Image (cartoon, rainbow, N blue to C red; front, side, top):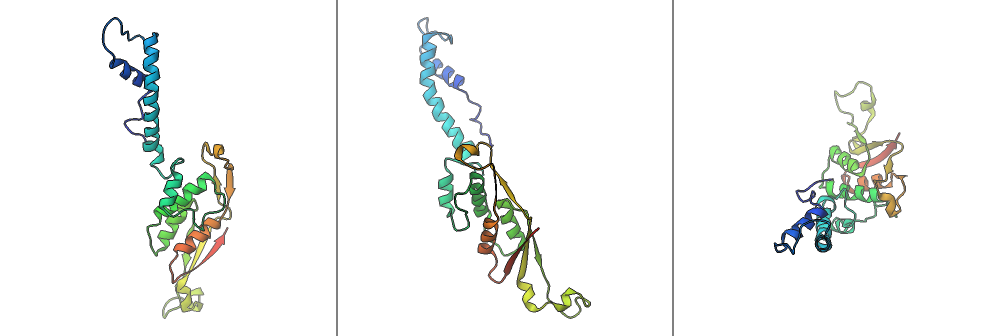
Length: 203
């Protein structure tokens, strides 16, 4: 979680701030065990509650990897949910889809596809081939590859990729973990180069 200079303020600090605004004199004691202190605490609780919401906005909701209350707004800004998001996604899966969309600034390289997969929570590599050409290969595989192979990209992914629930996500009805490769294939096919042919190998 990020931290702002406002994160360290406490309810007791707000109470002292309200007490500091009171007139001075024997009729306005500052001791914490007085009725006046309790009144000041009741007034300051309202302002501290507003402050706590502000800190939540700055420290949590402004971060797409942590946001909960503003997650629907983040998703709307980036066109989510889309066909690549599984039905009834968990909180972790929604965050992963959002981060992948944010990371998806565009590109046609294998490195770009790998970075988008990483944002989704998948560790992959991509295999490409060089077609046969004069002087390349000596009766090896390259000698038999036609020109079409320059457009073939194989995505190598683990057999199983587990998405674990985030701390506190059980309150939203999320499972502790889930397994799905649908998002990976859908997202990479959607952003893959038009000239390329993607296929997926697990294991």
